[in-house]
Image (cartoon, one colour):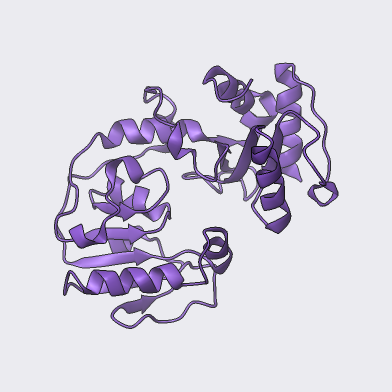
Length: 266
């Protein structure tokens, strides 16, 4: 795969030894670090095996912005150490805005709106998080209904065609830019979707359980009428920008060198 080959070349350029193998041949940890793309059942076994052995894993998947810059596989991909999300460490150091600037992100003032946007995950994503498909979203809508009478829009993951309407909410499944749904939005509610980051940039408060919006979001849905509208969003974006790299940067060793310089890898 292009991503795996790019990471392998970059690791070699930094001066570390690297060996490429198909994930299907994994039996037990036999290297110092595992690097892989995606999170299917086999790769979840790789992740667990290495972490149980006390060895680092580097998980690569679709990025936060610029995913399709120059093409599906050559755009930006998130690179996370020892977790599906780099939440536990991505703000251990304060990063300047030089890298974030290339994405042309413009912040809007904090807003007040009327509807609540529940951003769903896919069936595969739900299983990875320990839920049945749509289990968390159905719980979230029911919990929100206990605390608010605001309109709730359930935006299903566009790529998952198995989604269905949830009682107490209006169903939407579209590939239209999600930013259209953020207009007039009171809050974004999601388990970990990047829509929560989009919301914060647009001045819309976020509620999430995991993911990089967490430092500026709430997780208690009983607080839906008292969302958080403060925090350094610019610094959040600056730090997120160093959690994703394009294929050229992977090939040149920029990604690997950064992880080592941050003290995340030996």
